[in-house]
Image (tube, rainbow, N blue to C red; front, side, top):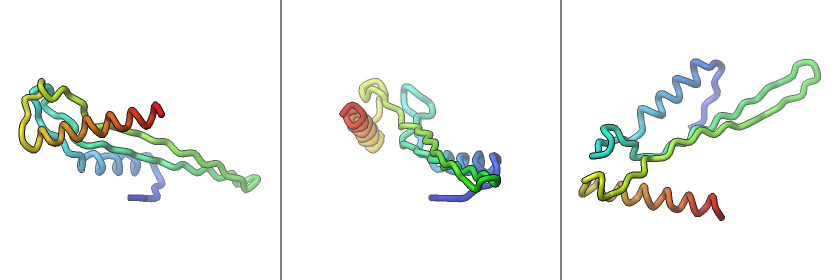
Length: 99
């Protein structure tokens, strides 16, 4: 989703909406364990009205799903499948970063 905003209050509101859509569940290790990844990209444009120039920068905020030892979480069924998928995706991300 892409939105244009005009204040810091709008940034916080959009971040809250995104966070409210995150998937969480309880495990033996954490009462609230994040089961999804989230990436928040904020592109900031600054226009100089004196010389009509502009500068643009992008800020990336990344919150990855919790990585927990499957044996210690005591999960089964769908939660076990989620844990395996999360661990695989984090392992893959690590390989990409180190490549």
